Length: 157
Image: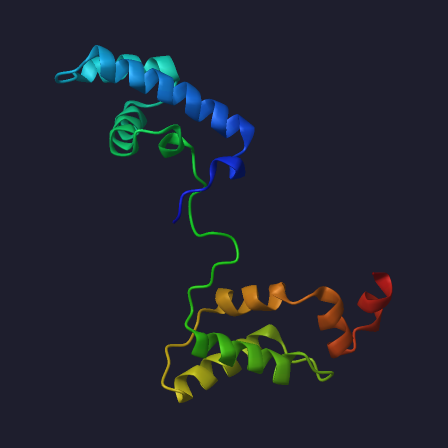
C-alpha cells in the first residue's frame, strides 16, 4: 500500500502523528543506547497506547524518520480493490448481464450456480457466493430494476 501524501491526510490524524513523532523523537534522543521495557512502557503511557504499539511506532520512526511514517492508515484493502483475475471478473459480468438482468428474474442462487459453472467450464476456480453478490450490489439499483422489469422500484426513486 502506498503512503498518502501530506495533503491527503485528515488534519486530526496529522496532529496525532505530529504528537507521536515529537514524543518518539524525544524518547530516542534521551536514550541513545539500549531502551528498556520500562522506558517503552512510559512512552506508551504518555501516548496512551499499548506497549506493542509503542514498539511499532519506534520501529516505524527509526525506519522512516518522518511524521508521515507515523500517520495511522486505514487497514485492509483499499475501497474498490478487486482480487479476482480479469477472466473471472468478465465471466461474472457477462453472466449477470445475460442471465440475471433480464425480465425472467432468476434468483441469486441460480446466478451463483451459473457463474460457478461457467468458471469451471473455463478451467477457472469459481468465485465465492459473496463475491458474486458484491458484484451485484455494485450495479446501480435503477439500472438493475429497469432491466429486470421491477416497475415499483423504478417508480420509487
